[in-house]
Length: 176
Image (cartoon, rainbow, N blue to C red):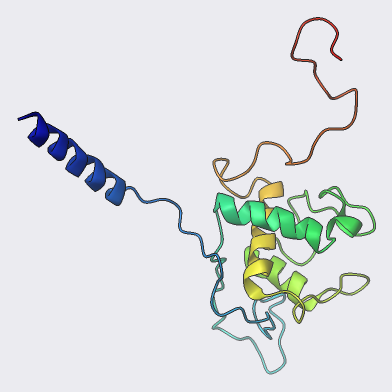
């Protein structure tokens, strides 16, 4: 009898583990093509030959995913986006923590900006960064503005605080 109870409990535990679905992560997305698009996002309604009624809808496949936002943060620093935009506050490049964007703040517009570049400073990264990494950077940039769910966005940076004024001593008395 105790053997049957253990076997039944083991079967139930296995079924629960099999039914549990975690967040899907593509370790090596396929295909890893380079992102070069001619019409990923519409910038203006003015077109030669009149208005175009049909515009393709472009969605970020890595939107609202905590893993992809953190990968976007890593890539943002790895590709040295922080060299011009700092940590989103702007420097040489414009600030990324804002609500109104010059070329649009939708994911397709940000994708276009990264891939094609912009006049007066933003280089075109389309031939250098795979498409999935561009989308991960877009997800991270949108998380800076609160455009991603709070449950998927980190509450703090993943760096160590080195400023002595911001470090809080968690123990009482002097530390060595």
